[in-house]
Image (cartoon, rainbow, N blue to C red; front, top):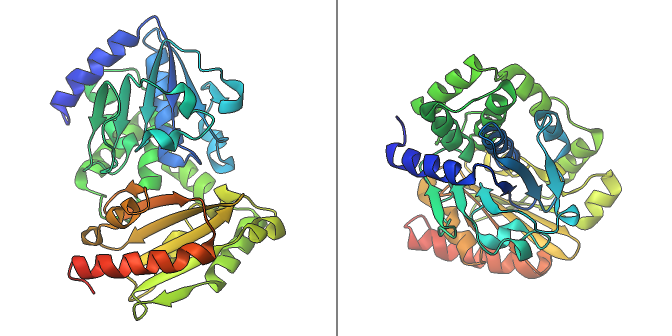
Length: 329
């Protein structure tokens, strides 16, 4: 059993949900691990006589809709907050639910996550910072606990793992990750279909957005940090939206000699920052924390009510101070 102590607490939480209406919440601008984890937990709960459904502040991204199946999803604008209990997955902080969901999320019964920055805001918290994805945590809890895992659930867990490991390229990819993925494929997960839908089905607009992102690159600290920019006008002129920035920051990090890659994007007067490091020792979550953000040692994010022009020098100053503090200046 991979998580014996957490397994007991998860089993008890599931039992407490039986016969109840349970909303499963995810974070704003949901990614593969968020949606995959919502789908997986929702389906397992429904197999245990729980009237579970998923709620997000934002729509499920286009490339992920095919993995939802018949799992019930509700957007925040359609939800009045009614539920007997709330559960959350892959959401590191209460504010990350988004303005449409947070007012209804006063008391979370169960919080399952793998972000180091998660403070444990629920009644029951299963937070495993060493896990590659929330989907990995759930897959092990389901398989070790003897829960019903249908092909859609198996694929959903696999999607969470595949996306948060960067197609199994990141340092969190371990023998245990491959082992649980093997078990998921035996239950119906299809790696080839997942790869096609996620990475080989792009729109022309996203490729045009990528062109603009690459052309915007700015080198800092002797080329060890590369920052790419997306302005709101870029979305308008390419016919794209913020969900099309998924994965772009990895291009900045992938350059030879670069230690940190950064994406700064503007949308509706707000700024979102994504930070990626090649090595977890850079602890980019600590940089994000200075701006009320958080995440993982090698992958973190932040949100600010400002412009790229105003925020850029503040971020560069913070990165410089952080590199010096960890002996990497």
